[in-house]
Length: 359
Image (cartoon, rainbow, N blue to C red; front, side):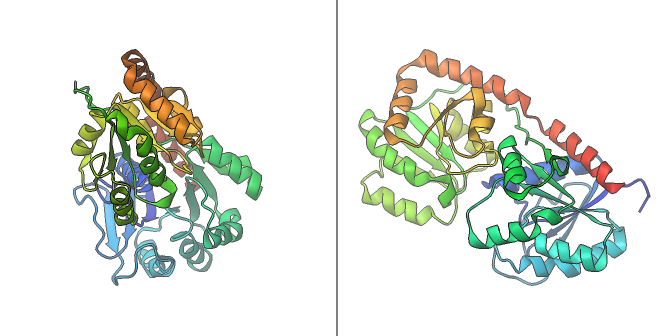
């Protein structure tokens, strides 16, 4: 290993291509960007997890034994792998993908085996879970540096945990700029994201009771633990002809489904950034999003950000669909807004941060 090589060790819970999880998409983009810039990335993945095997400068190590996904045991499982990788590479940066499933193991490794290693972690947002809150209180002051994806989360860290601003870097994710393609918009609205409680898809199903008489259809693009429960609710409310769950779309298929929609809707209860609505803006689709978390900051002037009130959402959606000039204006606003978010800038900032922490 040459002295000038930058080596980052990054235990991950997943790097699946075409993932519908924003955090996983973010990490794949960042780690690929770093590798393309010549950074050597030592990656630890759970047993059997998928990844892009053609990516240069990725050195992937799988945990040898299967265990339950989203298990805190991952903290313990990575320690032996970290020791083995450290003996070979002497990495100086240990990138913590998740403070909850990686952070404790990373902290044990550093304090017992490699005190000179710097722990750099990312917080997208905070969730109100007992174990998560406990881990935050115990460990958030122990990280050498924290990356956040929004001013909103950065301010919460400073306020709630008294972290000095010098230890926090705000690095926005990037948005891929798609090729312009002319499509005929259908009388549809679309949502894309992991089907979990935080994404608040139930709100959209209830909302469709207000919109079905206008002939509007909803495409739910994504997969997750609530898929079956949401499907049951759709059937129970008699909305099978109005709402469609599309769980296994690849990137091009997903983009096509969003492009043909007249509006992209995103009623999330909490976001530390919100990649999905910005990706929709890049495709030229007007966006209506909730005013929760960092969404007012990231959606900004590119879309409509409103409280989670079904009557208000129904009124805004109908207004956009019935007013082509307004839809065109929102489309242009969105495309212009997302130009400020680039992966190149995000990766450059992380490389700069990495070099500072290596010294």
